[in-house]
Image (cartoon, rainbow, N blue to C red):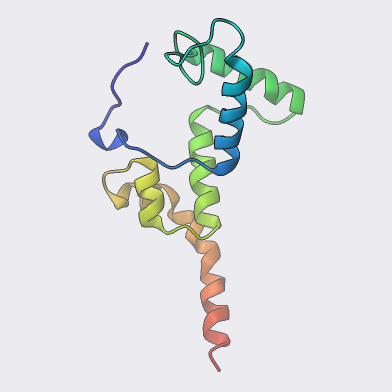
Length: 129
């Protein structure tokens, strides 16, 4: 079932990486000749969006095949945010990307990731000589 998001800030346009865009273009090209595909279909699904149950089932199956720990679907969001922060994205940009209305929400959730950057600050200060 398609419903509105829980907050107004969740309604946003976010850029997608080139690799994903390329994959989506390839999927469009391949699918346009099959299964009755048309431009009214959902990216993930067909005439109806893929259900949460199917996504969870696929995730669980892939975790088993890869022999990795099961995580919640929402944990992918946390992984993405952590990767962005650890790769140098500013907390303001990460907050906006996640749709947080207040930066405090992002800081409270991910502040532990910045402890690793304290050593970087010491290295910068030491190299100022």
